[in-house]
Length: 466
Image 1 (cartoon, rainbow, N blue to C red):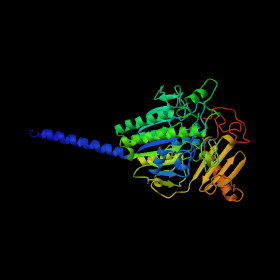
Image 2 (cartoon, one colour):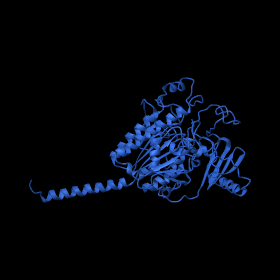
Image 3 (cartoon, rainbow, N blue to C red):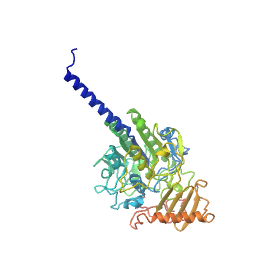
Image 4 (tube, rainbow, N blue to C red):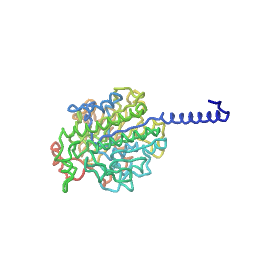
């Protein structure tokens, strides 16, 4: 082989420098963690085995917990889905936006304004690729939609629910209707796997929001095509109150757990697992087949069972394995936390109400904070301050120590009138800073004609409760 000329040496050196610079850029870019945010729909606090479910084992979700941290005092921003999703994507109390007043969004022409800064839009400015797979429920096309709020890619359904088999009219792939056949939980998991593979090949940091519909009704496991045909037949409704069982519910949760396992395997197979934050949580408390122990209440209620959710974080090298945190936290905390992890900034026009949890993920001691809720149905109000919780339902008011009394049975408002008066006043001060209740907004709860354990609750017409 002959000697290289000076020009060839210089060219080779320049090429090497270019390659080195490209490598440095790729390394710097990859130093930003990927984020995979997995959210179940209507999953109760104890519906996964690492939080106490006893009749089945969620092996893959448990594996996440073994590799990371469980928050033991995690709350949803609302007791219903679209309101929580508003808080999640904006990092702010949902009551600051018209869409956040919907409990949940049904058919009104309301949605998340495309001009609102969001988690995906803010991460995009920091160089992230973004995708939403699954449920949106923050406004219908063409006026609203995931792509108008910062997501590069969308595969899923726009509204609050979809049948698990008969989804040809609800499933979207980008701007086109998708006719993909199969069990919806599996389809969402498969698309998440292929998206991980695509983003990993691109070698840029990414956010994947994987919002399952499971275990939201209709109550259909992977083999329940006959039940799907029944509830989607003319004259029927997927908002059924005559279907489901604990066994069916278990199959729905386990199918989601298996799909999550495939996503975790894809992260490992593509070599990005060590630099990926994985979250698993729920959008609100559990519904009728959920296990919410040791809490009472369920979806649509500001009792602990309607608000308390599992929340698991795995981030190798940053979060110690198999740990727990008693930090009170809320859905809106994820935006400031993810922005801090990515080295990105919030928009000054929309300062987060949520808390940056990075110190707690690193093992910092919990800090006391004040959290607020309201829910239009039954005129519900709630506030958490330390161990204390103020609660109002219709004309009934309560003060609970929810650490000592998680079932919310001992009403201490007379014994500790000083604490009750202070929390009630602070709730009123906070509420005055939010948008007022909209008399036209949707809201929902369960009636005594629907759930037998709601004795005395007014009977309710069966409108869709999404």
